[in-house]
Length: 75
Image (cartoon, rainbow, N blue to C red; front, side, top):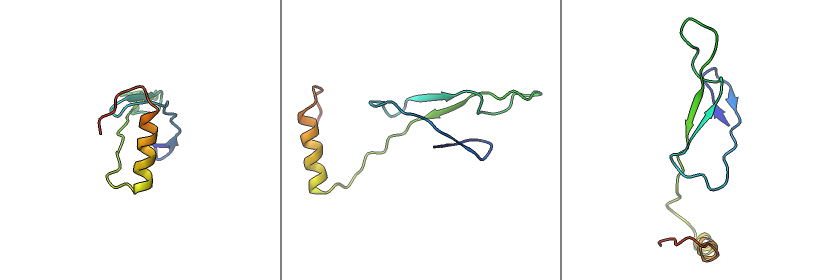
């Protein structure tokens, strides 16, 4: 859920494979246009946080996942 400017929340679906830094637009949930009642759009930029501490089991699972992928992943 994304907090909006009017103290509410808006649901945002993030497609699988979306990279950090991607920007999404939520129409009509931004700042009101000057002198009018129409609202602009709210832009949300995704910031993916990578965990820094993983258990041995988590590392093993990530290694297993990486071995199934066609992309080259540096370790």
